[in-house]
Length: 307
Image (cartoon, rainbow, N blue to C red; front, side, top):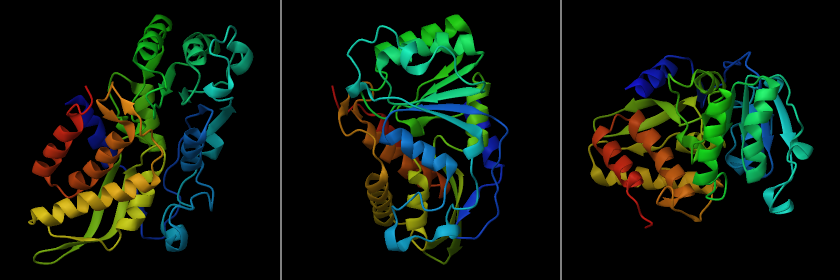
């Protein structure tokens, strides 16, 4: 599969190891414009800028520079536009350009999340006027660019020759050969579908996780929190019970950090947070090469639970 080939290219790139001190590893010359309006957008920004002290999820178990601090920052690559949330704006916006502007800064890609539908629908033409060739919408809620709106945005992007993607949940974002700008963003900024490698100690029956090497983090940063809390975790890969316990443990960790919507989403047939949790667990099954369990987990994620 083409997507698999793109992912394999990322696997070859150096990751950031949670559990070891390291020097800055990830860098990019790509510039993005991040348009946000709520806490989810702020989490993405925090994850990308990686300022010391921004993450307080681990509390007294924080390991600081042994985790992510000092190992990367895209602060100089990001132009941030904060606008009011949809709840604070009229139901219909006649002139969305008055809120967001007629033109945007000169960047390679616009990343937007949690915006008013009328602002979303205005973006393709604004990007066209600004000479920007890529639009990525990260959807963490059923109300964020719902299916009909997303289809209209996609049609407008096609009209203006703009590359477009709109994953829901955002951690479903994967590189694709037909989306080179967005794929470059994933490859260089290292956010999207979580991709990890485990550094382990092995005995006869158990695997003990020493460190977690992150190749790609979920946009919100949940991958880092789960990785830190999984250090020293032990699993027996031959035991179905042990595997199930690990999956439950990773799921619980993920849900304690993730702020994706808990509302029913008929596009997914489940809640957005459930899908995000499945994807987080799948990253560990994949890293442990537990292919049968991974296949079962993916099938369960895809099964419609809301009709």
